Amino acid sequence: MTHEPEDGIGEVVGACVLVPEGKYEVAYLSYETGKFFGQPKVMVHFSIINHDTYAGTPVDRFYNAMSLIGPPKRFGKYKAACRGDLVREHSRLVGEQKRSDRISFAILKEKCVLAQIDTVTRDYRNQPLPQDEQYSRISKLLEILSEEY
Image 1: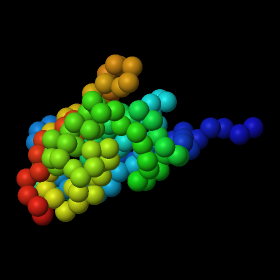
Image 2 (image 1 turned 180 degrees about the vertical axis):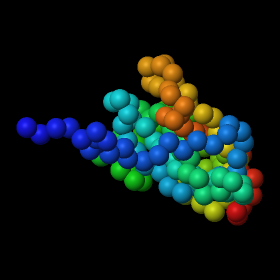
Image 3 (image 1 turned 180 degrees about the horizontal axis):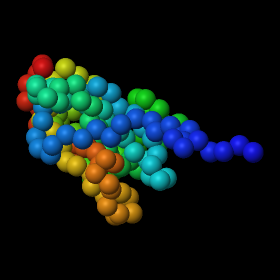
Image 4 (image 1 turned 45 degrees about the vertical axis):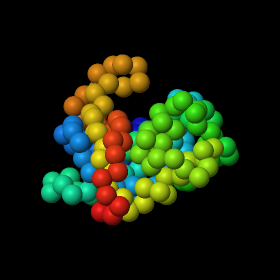
């Protein structure tokens, strides 16, 4: 008869990144498309810069998408609603683009962006998360601070 190990064999992957809430300077890294609970999403990855304690800490901005074009992947294609957060926030940050029917995050490369970072304290069912499962996320990209970081 085989007994279950006391310390378990299931492995927890990744770590919940938690930084104090506030405004941080961040640098764009990349984006990817995916689905969470059946909802298409665009996840934009940033890293905190110019902060002694949290420099290099990864943080993400999540946007809803109308649909994904093709499979979820890094630099995947998607359709965004013209009145959605993704389009409005992008337009406010980078201004008018040559093509109003396209979005590119590449314009954020090597720029310093000011972001509001909040703590997620409840899960998707609105249930409180234990302290060690809470994490930080970008709730809003506020402005481009400089051309280079």
